[in-house]
Figure 1 (cartoon, one colour):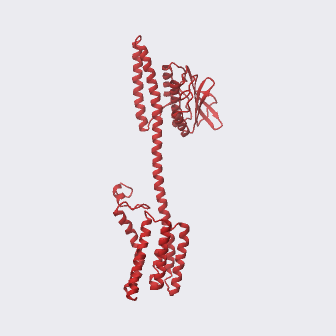
Figure 2 (figure 1 turned 30 degrees about the horizontal axis):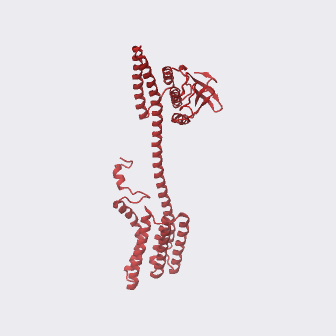
Figure 3 (figure 1 turned 120 degrees about the vertical axis):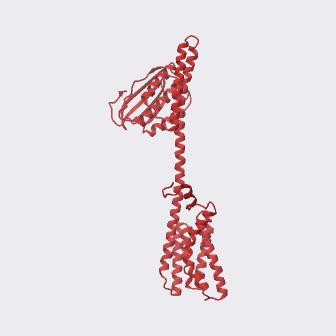
Length: 399
């Protein structure tokens, strides 16, 4: 159901799509019916032709001219709702309308001045705004001169012609705004879909890269231990099963959008992953998360996971140090995560630039208001991630 109480499909079928061409004959009929009531101003010319005040030849010519005028007007206004004519064609047809209105008024009498209403409406609805101002003004002036010529006293119609022309300019601008808003809404929906795809790609990359690396390492250990130490090999296989089950849970949470890793859990997993890879690990215990939001903590946890995955897979390091410190910077207090190894490789292998993991980390940290620094140092590789901490802590205090 929609806000007005109609079912969505019924409302879509019966709505007039503003600023768009009709999709079927029913929509074309509804748009035409919306235009027809404005033909009320043709009542006076029709009554004049039916009264018998003119010669048969003049009456026949009047009917033909009136039909031509009405056809040109309907074609211009109706086509303008969806598939408008080119600029030159519109200008030529508006000129034809203005000429017919002026000629018919001067030849058949003051009863035909209502035609200037349609000329004004057409100018406001079809011409560019800057040209429409002048066209409506000239049309109103021509009507005024016709009324003075016939010494008519229907001066209120002058105001109607002027106001209707400018009103149609406003309606045209409203239609244009509606079309632009519809396009903007479609663009926003597309951007939201792209953002969700990027989020899912980042989560799966970080989750599966870490978990599969750990599974690979433990599988190799189990294979080496199996001949001489089957009990230890069985323990490694049990660890593989646990990691696999946790990876499955993480993937399900990532797909549903609920994955929010905790820094303390990642620190514990870091110790296990580095030890399994034969890397001497220096990892702190429970971190001090004073003043750090959940989003910031999650961004740091993702940074730690990606950094450790790179150490295990690409660095060739024998030692890795992890630090979590509160620091005071010029931008305010921050919580800093630093991961440093002594390996010859980099985040994506020696000689390679930043991979998808570091790019995704940069995006995550920027969303949390943080920063990422990563690069080679004298004897290894260092990654530093910082996120804001609302409550200042002692400078350099360890986790």
